Every structure is written in C-alpha cells, then in structure tokens.
Length: 105
Image (cartoon, rainbow, N blue to C red; front, side):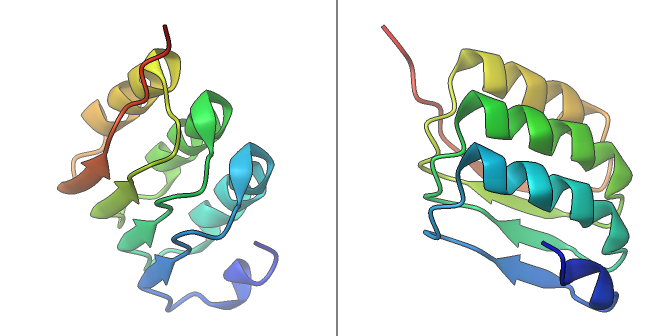
C-alpha cells in the first residue's frame, strides 16, 4: 500500500488471492485515493469480511476513476454488503462489480 502513491499512472491492480484480510484493506483503502488513474481493482479471494468492506466503502467516494471492482469470495456479510451498496450508489463511474455475499446463520 505504501508504494501506490508512487504509481500515479497505475490503471489496474490485481491483488486476487493474496490473504490481504481486513487489516490489509484498511491500509490499501488509505492509499487508493492517491491513485488517480486506477480504473480496475481486483481483491477477490482475500477474506476481507465486513470490516474490510467497510474500509473499502469509505474509500470509494475518493476514487472517481474506478470503474471495475471485483470482490468475489471475501466472506462479506449483510453489514458489509450494505455499506458497499451505499458507496456504489454514490459512485457514478463504477460500472463493473464482481461480488458475492456470505450469508451468516
């Protein structure tokens, strides 16, 4: 995450299956707004859960160029999905979203 601000022309970031978890997404979410050209972010299979979804949802409004977000297999439940849905609703550029929700009993 510390290197991202040094890559202002970065357009795609694939961190699929990297065991990032909620804490990693917290750091990533802090750096994302300093990537003005980022259009696609793939965080699939990272077990970010509801907490990571919350961090990401807070960062989305500050990432206006982002058009693709992939969050498949991240153990995101109802709470995290609701927070992401609110962020997506206010993000006009976000067109492609890969997402599945983990329902807890």
